[in-house]
Image (cartoon, rainbow, N blue to C red; front, side, top):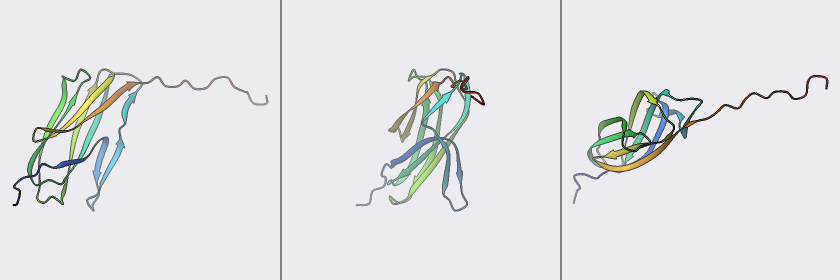
Length: 143
């Protein structure tokens, strides 16, 4: 029996500042985020979402969305059609969210679905951090 369709696995999903592709086809991920730490809000940033699909067969629709901390408000969403011709192949998709404005601190969520099946839900923390003041005082020259 030959399957006509096998839902793929999400091998990785990473938020980063930029994704580049070399001439040999390899990808470079620049500025992979753990969280977004800023001195004040609101802040406007550009984000890329790098997804790698594998072990599937057929045609698919990847849906991604970014949810606000209330887990209801959708800040951004997008869809990408892709296909896998063999279960040994993989497919990389890159979504770009330009001029994304974060107004409040908290846990945002990135959801990645394929054909309406949730594959991952990533928390993404936006934090306001106070910069450390420069050191003052201390020993002076000649003391």
